[in-house]
Length: 488
Image (cartoon, rainbow, N blue to C red; front, top):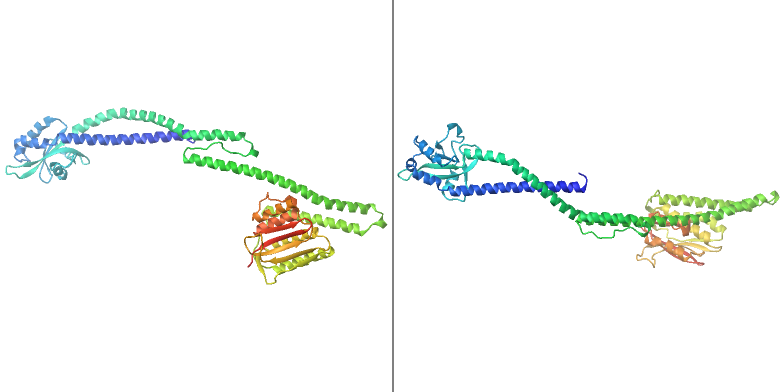
């Protein structure tokens, strides 16, 4: 029962069978109601005529042994009639039956009075021979010579014998009726199922055919369904979900391709970054080894050592970038004195800047406090200053200043400017880095291979700190990075 076909068949069969049973019950009820109404209407004045015909009953006599003979004559009307005389309170006085058959010696006169008053038929009254059934009847008042009501003549229409024969006939015909109902309902259910299955499964068949066509589509060109579906709301929703999933698969495929291409370009760029210091390191060491012992200079070893430090720094940055991409670093926001952070930054880079004849100009209000992760912001500024020192010529200036507005921003907040007068960046590099302004959070495929590991780390860290950035750079004139800060 897991297939759609079997479920539809079972549902259609059960529904049709229940409907047929309900119709049958309604038909039986309607038939009984109509039969009772007709029979009671035909015999409505039966008791009245019987009371007038019989001389004893016409005198209002209700309890007399002579009534037995009159009852016997009346029974010639047929075994389906049972005749009783009642007193004014409904007590059974006389009857043509064995005493043990009388189960109700007292019956209610309310239905009898309603019948005599001419209420709408059919009206059922108590059956003296049964404790739990009511039957249609005919009734009339019995009056004495003075016109005083002495009781009732109560005639049951369809008595005990009639019920017995009707039960026998019903038991004989019940298997035929039930069998006919089952066969008819089965045939009707199959026909209904065939129509429903054809109508309901047509959109599913169409959807299944389109999904087969999806297998022939190229993932690089995108996956899609070729039709719209007008079936039930479930079919339409299913098709919409499938279209959405196919679109997501196509987008993820494109994203994976972009990520693979970005990583490929990143590895090429990284190989170039590693190749230069490695070649320098190997060259100076080989030169030092080839020279005679008395001609060897410590300058060669010092240059080789600097190349080794640069390789070490580059490898550390790669590990840091991997940690950022894997989500292993989470920010810890707190109140931070910006002047203390810049003072530590200047102290760290002063020896290196001095050796290259580069001036560091850090100016900030000592009272200003910001809300950030000081360690992550320190690493952002360290990478920017490190790149600035690397590309700024001798005699250049690297400055960090606080500005209160940014001309490219819709908000007028607190911005920190990091600028230099170095070599600057080319247009394609600037466009790649400008993506940070439009993407407050970064995914693994958002690597910027053309900018190097340092600026890729900057980009990831600013995403964690939820900081916006603007970049202005001109080749040969320098660069200016403006970072938005959250003021306390």
